[in-house]
Length: 209
Image (cartoon, rainbow, N blue to C red; front, side, top):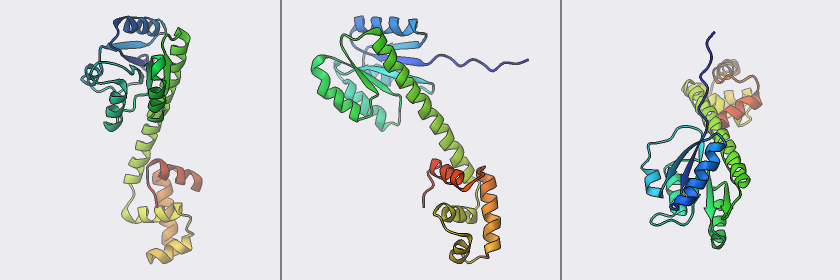
């Protein structure tokens, strides 16, 4: 009897120029069962090969050269949506609030407690897991939409807009029976059992009227 391979633990990336902080974070996180990669600055992290697993980033705001906010902006521009937890000093609260508005999950004020760190990491990983699941679902929906013929796509757009079969027939210049046939094929290809499910799949695949 074959068993599915066990997925590796999530990876927590730590970017901080302070060697003591890096050592403390690495110790806390490894004891909690996570894979940990530490980086001395933002550029070294950016030079790392692209990451496609489940993980999050624990990032210091103030660092020589590129600071944490700069790295956050670069990651957003490049479509790297790994959740970020910022580490800040007391005087960095305004910057931390700005970081949160730009999508950071949380910020920890130095000195932080181990449990506060692990709670923030768990929340960030949960968010990343949901994002990845959403991306997989969106990709699947787009693939289903891609199997539709141009006419089926026209029918789908009108169905999700709330048009009746009779209205769709009039708009497309075809019979109502033909609309029903196309509509049935659309439902089958999309894997939808109901109109609400069809609408959700279309939205997930970013198909809009």
